[in-house]
Amino acid sequence: MPFIVRFLRWGLSGSRRLILLILLVFMVLWLVYQSLVTPENTLENYQLPTETTLLAPIKLSDLKEQYADPSRIVFEGLDKNISSAAPESNDNQQEEAEANVSSLVTTDPLNEIEKAPATKTGIDYVVKSGDTLARIFANLGLSVDAMYSVLEADQEYLVLEPLMPNDSYHFTLDEEGALVELTRQLNASKSVSYVRHENGGFTYQESNKPINYTYQAMQNTIEGNFYVSAKRIGLSDANILLINDILKGRVNFRKDLRAGDVFHVVVKKGDVEGEVVGKDQLEALSMRVRGQDYSAFLHSDGRFYDAEGKSLTPALLRWPTRKRYRISSPFNANRLHPITGRRSPHNGVDLATPVGTELLATGDGVVTRVTSHKYAGKYIVIDYTGPYGSRYLHLSKPLVKKGQRVKRGQVVALSGNTGRSTGAHLHYELHINGRPVNPMTAEIPTTQSIPSGDRQEYSDRVTTFLDMMALKAE
Image (cartoon, rainbow, N blue to C red; front, side, top):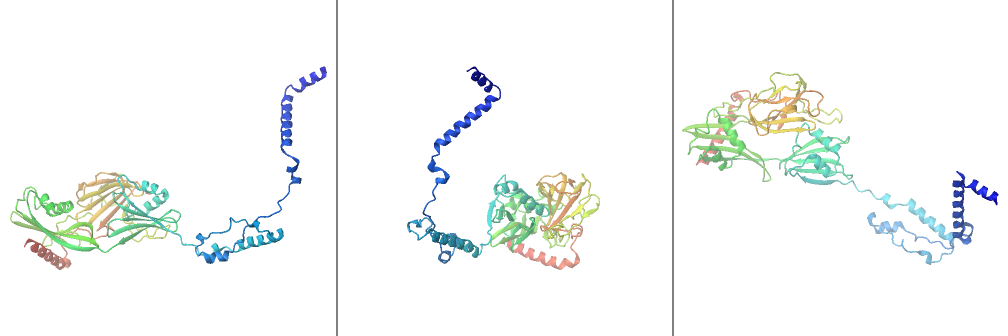
C-alpha cells in the first residue's frame, strides 16, 4: 500500500502528469468510437448495391436536328430513372453506358456550330454640370489608362475638354467592356472620334457633313443705341463687337450715332438638314452716320476691306515673342507617331523659350479659353478678328482671363514647362477657319490693300452685297 501511494505521487508529479492526462483522454475517445461502430458497418461487411442506375441514352444527332439554336437544347429525360426497366445484366448496362459516354465526348454539336461574332456596346452620355472626364470614365467603369490614352491623342487637337453641359459623347465598348472608340458631336456638321488601334493607343478621326449656306440681308434704324438696335434684328453679340472693331477710328458709336441713322448688314448662316450649324458670320455692312456712308466687306482671305479695297482689319504678328527663338520642333501635318507608325500631326511650332518668357497676342481678339490639360499643360486660346485664332501651350502662368479682349502685341502669358514636356518651350499654333496651319509660312494679314490679282473677285463680291442691301432697303 505505501508503495502504491509513493508510485502515484511520483506519477502525478511534474511533466508526467500531462502525459498521463493525454493517455486518459485517448482511451476515453477509443471507447466512444468502439461503441458507435457496430460490426455490420465495418468495411469487410459492407455490401455493394445489386442494381445500377443509369441515365437514359441521349441521341445528340436528333437534338441537333430538333434545335437549330444550341442555346435552346433541352436534355429531356435526364430526370427519368430507367432502373425500373430491369436490365438483362449489369454487364450489358455498363457497356451501353460506356458507349453513350464515348459518344458524348467525341460528338459535341457546340463545336460544330460557328461562334457568334463579338458584339460591341454603345453608350450615349450627355454632360451634366460638374462632370469631369475622369468622373465620366469612372461612372462607366472604364479604366484610367484608357482615359489617359485618349487624352494623349487629344493633345494636338484639344477637342475633348473642357466639358460643357449638354455636350454629347458616345462611348463604344467591346465585349469585355473596354473602350474602343470615343466620339464627341461638336455640332450637327462635325464630330470627332478617337479610335483604339492594336497597341492600345487611340487615333484621331474627323467626320463632316456638308453644310448648306445662305445669305441674309438685314437693316434697322437707330433707336436708343447701336447695341439695342442691332440686337432687335437678331445680330449676335460677337458680330456687334466685330462691327465696332471694324469701324473704330472712323465711327464713335457713343457720340456720332443719332436716332434715325440707318445701318445694313449681310450675314451668312449655315445649316445641316435644317439644323443650324455654327454662328452667323458677318459678310458685309453699310452705315450712314451724319450723312456720311461707311462700309466694310469680308474678302476670301478672312479680312474686311472698304469698298475701294483698303484693309480695315489689323495685321497679325508672325512671332508670338519679342524676339525669334530657335524652333525646336517644326509644324508637320503629316508626322508619323514614332511608336504606332500612324499619322500623328504636330499642329504647331515649338519655340525653345526659357521658363518665364513673355508671350504676345499676335492680333486683336478675345480670349476664349484659359485652362489646363494633362498633356498640353496650362494653355490659352485667342480668337482674332476674322477667321484667325491661336493657341499657347505648356505655359507657366496665363496673364489673361476668359472673355478678356486683347490687343496685338499685348503680353498674355509666360512660357513654361507644364504638361507632358521634355523641356521648357512654347508650343504655338495658328488656326485659320478652325484648321491648324504653319504659323511661320501661312498667309496672314500683313498687307494693307487687296492684291491686284484679287481685285476683280473682290469687286464682284462688293457689288453682290450692295445689291442685296439695296433690295432690303426698298
